[in-house]
Amino acid sequence: MSPADLAAFRRDGAIRLAGLMADRLAGLLELRAEGPGTRLTLHGLTAQLAPVIAAAQALIGDGARPVRAVLFDKTADDNWALAWHQDRTIVVKDRREVPGFGPWSRKQGLLHVAPPFDLLACMATLRIHIDPCGQDNAPLKVALGSHRIGPVPARDATALASAHPHLLCLAEPGDVWAYATPILHSSDRSAAPRRRRVLQVDYSADTLPGGLEFAEAEA
Figure 1: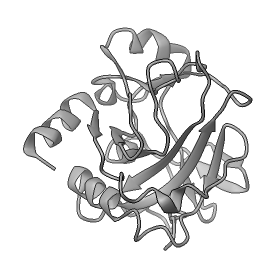
Figure 2: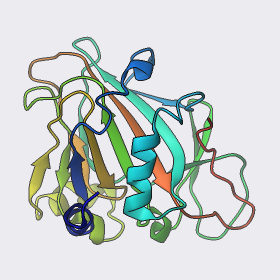
Figure 3: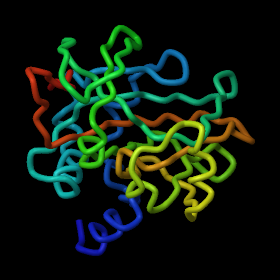
Figure 4: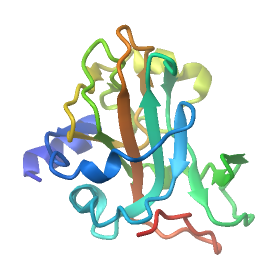
């Protein structure tokens, strides 16, 4: 990764890593999603994701490792929209009452908690595109620079996103989009629905306090 890429990531909060996974998609084609987003672990896939892990380490530090994975599979029958928002939760193994962590929730059997924002601000999210994603097929939209404005209440997300330039994350199969985890982002319904699979993996280089542990994706 070039110094220019790193500078753009820190400034804008999002960069395209064209073709990073182009020769490693075969093992991802068998992944299956249930509903808009399926939380999963990466059993047996960590070695295949080596280029993405290396990119995350270049962006946020050598200790970066996968801590949450979600598979999105948008089709004509499952065609949803997401309003402007920040990703504000992590997945942990067990509940422990630690100051600054909460509220708690359970999604698809996994325990989620909202951590202090400072932890989110040091994380990166990398999206591996399995299918083409053009302008009419609901690409992710990001508000450039919004990762630096701190926590955003849901009621204010749209207004604050409008104060930043927007970028459409267009992609070819094997492209990877990396963004700062707390960046404001959204997605429309697809105008011309075609299959659009994306494996999204969050990375952190931090250790959680008070006995909390990430429910890490395992090899």
